[in-house]
Image 1 (spheres, one colour):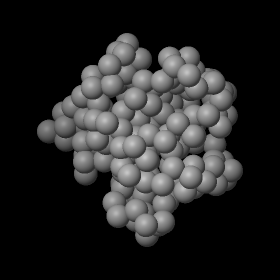
Image 2: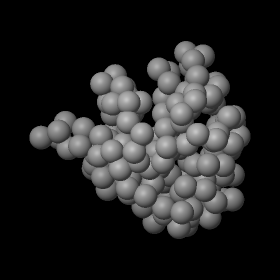
Image 3: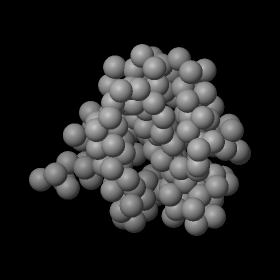
Length: 154
């Protein structure tokens, strides 16, 4: 599994207008609708339900919001970098600016876990996060994420 299979170039976005967790989840749902054809309201509801179980902010300015979506045929991803970090109830209590959202079919099982592990490993790499924060073009952000994964697999 590689990130390029999960994350389309059009599912990557630099955002300047998000100022709260609620707005961020709306933005992720909207991006998933645009890039993957998902229903934004269903996606938002699933993300909110998952966040209610416990925050997905993993620390160091990174969050991995994820949810299972009824009717989805494969695991899909979206990535957002915020110009200004927001409070996302991260485990280290630091604001978050890098959001890698993962959406999986309800019955994805192992595939969902593999994708989540892959994204988690990628986003734990401090050099990747630094490169993501240093670039303002969505296409460059996509390349950084997908090339890192390819290099790790080689």
